[in-house]
Picture 1: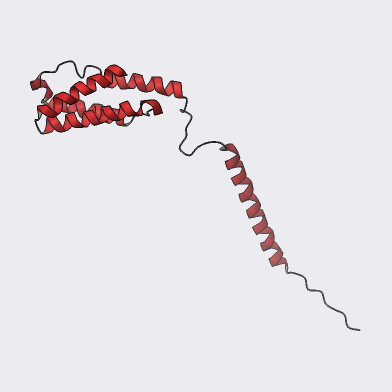
Picture 2: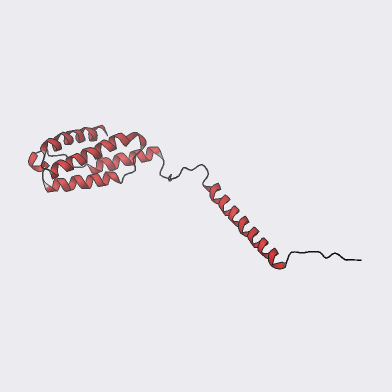
Length: 143
């Protein structure tokens, strides 16, 4: 009688299959814990998304940025290099602020007005500077 020999997988193959299984199980568990901790969060969202606190913080920093900026309106002061430096500095300070959704339009208008003032000072064009200074004053008063 012939005895059929059984074919068994080698120990090496079993070890490789077991290692792949352990790796995939670990990957699944780690991804599950990551996505489980971040479920319901929007990409880019951070803990500062408390609307009332963000709005108040923005208003405070906005008003602080413009403190002592539009006190004098003399044409000589408006075309001064110090005024240009202040304008650029304020614009940069506004661009780094986190802006609440309902204040984005006013924020954008203020940045555009500051850019126009900056361009007017560089080109020594009072017709560009003065109207935007008045517009900026109106924006600041509405905040």
